[in-house]
Image (spheres, rainbow over the protein chains, first blue to last red):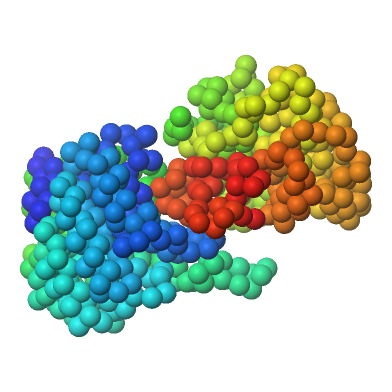
Length: 304
Length: 252
């Protein structure tokens, strides 16, 4: 079974990668298994300076999912280049950095600093974090701003740029088209859906930030629908994510139009979920009549 | 080292109001667990695992005891498991109570509140085995919630406190200052306001506090369960750097 996928900047031996923010910088999960088994790894968000993030509680469980408002806590891009990327380099898998910021300048600055990291293969441009007060999400809900930040980061970066789309928009296709036209090498979708949970005894939101990003199986149908719609209108590759827990889920994302996928929340329940999906994928592809991952991508569109 | 293990439920009993004691069997966890560490337990139907501290270990029987209070969906579901079923855990997780630099003559005070009492029992047993002089103050809401009194009394002098005075002494654990004998170091676990009061009361003593927080991964990757350091310059991860910290290390 051919699990390999070739995308701009990314030669993947399989299409499975842990999603940004759910895997730190890989150190903790490397206690459980050899990370070289992964197709790639997407690091936790990098910002220009160290960010301490939001007050706690930062997470809350929901039906078939969870809310989080971590607030992009990270040691800053320079520290990440100095210590985290060299750690991940040992596993010889493509490394993708998640680039975040509050201003246009910060995005460009983070992308520029990341150019110093030789082993970085791509950037996931995070214009869709719902959990920081300033910036971030604004770039992700206005097609013009999204296009401008994409263009600037493309100019600044010497690796391919995958723009991570927010599902918190009225028209996901317009966003995707604007970002493609601005020169993005690929799309990554979807980020979390903004949500809230209220604690009955205190009558207050459970999450200190009040709102948080909903992830997990609860959002999978939203992700599938958005990828399916976007696939019909853009030609750049899509890294799909949103509630993936099994190899069957992966196939569903591929059929909707994803070229590769990221697994997020499921890592918390099962630290081995990524290698287990990689092991299970050949059988699932075979069961449904595919001889490669590439063959399955966009499969749901061929029957129209 | 933390591992993903399957544990068999040997027994499950309600031992006080809304309080469940579960005895789990697993060789690796029972051999490696240290006082203050926790198990990150997968509960069927829940997206996130539940972090529960280890209350006792029996290395001969290869068992680990956990205690939890039924407060939400996850703990309710966990309380419905039956003997013979298995649970999937990550553990032993976190760093336990440090025992380093404790001299043989040192006297130790354990201060527990509510469902923060269990990890102190495992610690007390370990200290007792090592020959230390242990005394304990354990506080509960009211009589119905009291558990492990007899067990603590076997470890050393123990004062039971209830907030409403329905059992033992009336008040808060920190009201017992005059009733405890001199000690050199304290270890405490309980609700945040109690930990704050304990820290203030025993400012001149070396103390270690164990914290709880809503957790995501439980291994340090998701940054959900952080606590600010005392100088406000940074955060510690409760699951990975803790759950035990020196009293002056973190901001309550």
